Structures are given as C-alpha cells and as structure tokens.
Length: 92
Image (cartoon, rainbow, N blue to C red):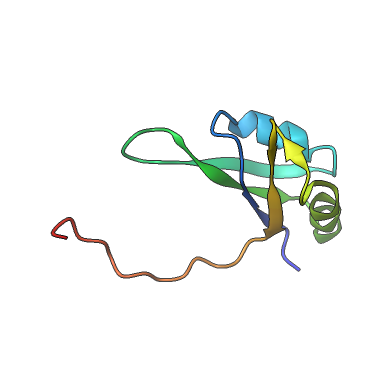
C-alpha cells in the first residue's frame, strides 16, 4: 500500500489547508493538494493527500471514504500512477 491518497468529490471551495486539516484527524499529513484547472484557476473537485505512513493512509481511507466533507460525499482511495495519455489538441 502506498501512502498517497486520491480524494474525489471535493467541494469546489476546498483549499489545500482545509484538506490537510481534515486528514490530520487520521494521522500525520505530509502534503495535501487540491488540483486546480489551469485555465480558470478553479478547483477540479479532487486532490491528493500524502500521509506519513501506510498505516495512517489506511486509517484515513477508513475514516473518510464515503463520508461528507463540506456537504459533499467524498471518495478516498489509494492513488494510482498517472497514465500516459495522448496530448489533447485544440484542432477538434
């Protein structure tokens, strides 16, 4: 198990710090990042949290998966490596 977690379904108003504070309830948080859209600067509604240990990551999944954060039910799972995707073109 890796200690990097995917967090989906976040309220668009969630900040990195709010995400970090929420997950600190499960253990030590190494980093917490809400992913932002480059064009609009708005949240994409998901992010990543890195816990200090695998055990804390498991505790965070158990604590937060399917629970509400900011009025929305979030999904928490082990982060998977990013897949290589073909580059999008603006010609379409």
